[in-house]
Length: 396
Image 1 (cartoon, rainbow, N blue to C red):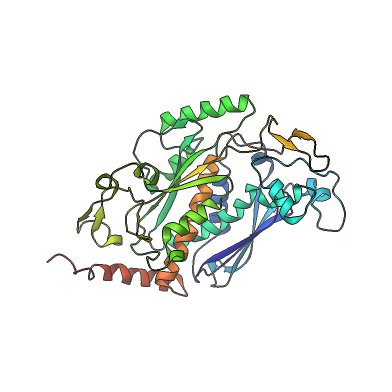
Image 2 (cartoon, rainbow, N blue to C red):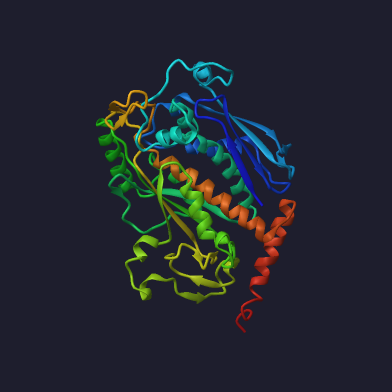
């Protein structure tokens, strides 16, 4: 089983993550992890914080000479702005210089203050911040490296920001990832990219924010990850929970789930054909469409896995207009402003890749097992080879 735990606050000394369950022998370097962290900072519409804060990695345990040891991996992501926040975030006994008593609508502020009995919303917002996703990206980078050992590759691209949308149906391949990351909004469609940038500029001029949609694609996923047997083993449920846990995500769609709800059954499903020339991940059984998103009956089908995430507009605005109540005085006021982005949809796609990778890697480990990457890969290869001998065997 693969599991991870993150710790740390947005303006604290550091974020940290511990990942347990990685097999020994996975080749990984600090540069590998830093690459995905840098991708998380991409995107037109990000705020000045991306320039101020630098992700400084330290590998603290579980890796020796560029290879995992099979023990828990521990990584620290230092906050280079910590000296500016010592007085506000010092763990030693004391009091902050300012108490935030006007909780921001759309954030965890008020519910967290009520739940834990806080009178300062900073006690909530620091941990609720999307800054925490930097630690998830580190864990996801390790999961992606493990999946690559069995030829599974994951990428994301932005298909909507505000009302600017990609209208074409062409999906990028793993070889297109650099091209996507070179886009200012991580969009595969140049025409839609220009419209998205114009939309962001217009919102920025008004001090407003934008949400949007990113699509995550997983290629070469083997058939049979997840299970139809138990509700909590279904791969679509696991993916939905993982993706919904990302800050500001309000909906998750697998395949053509939303559009499919309005279709007839004769139009909504993926026909099955047989082709011995196809990749071995599904033993020649092929779905030419991706309406189900590569998942049937709670299990991966061997087809392209497709997930879409819908992100709400960020609730911290550069023009504070959202009405709230000062919890100390009960007077009406407007919410305070923290440094914020116009949109974080491009970065959200990178975080979503990590969450999909963590779910798939965990289920792959459950399916194939192995204390070392070599054993894990060997077990996977044996399973793929055996697929051709099951379900009535190969065509005579």
